[in-house]
Image (tube, rainbow, N blue to C red; front, top):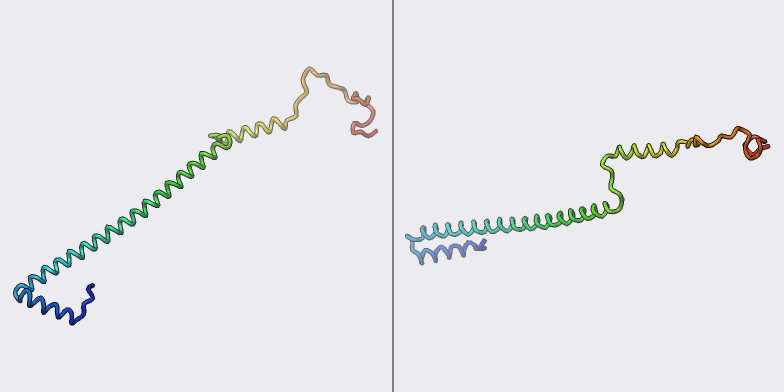
Length: 135
């Protein structure tokens, strides 16, 4: 952490022994150890808080992106509903209506009841021929 070699460490121990004396040196060592533990704990807490903030920012940006996609999907759905008539609530009713419409279109229309019926052979050609254009 401090990149201190053997000779430098020995020099610091001798210097601390001369400055604080042999009786106070163990007490100073305990205080220094406690201080280092507090510094390590503070660094660990800071790192954890920083990582949580970064993760929170990532989640906020992902949530904003999801909200934008949802808004875009709602807008697309609104645009599509304006294009044509709304779909029926019951698709089977729509299918029955189509079948009935097709059945009425394909059925031959009966002649009116008050119209006179022409006997066969009384057409415009006077009954001559076979009715298929051949004589």
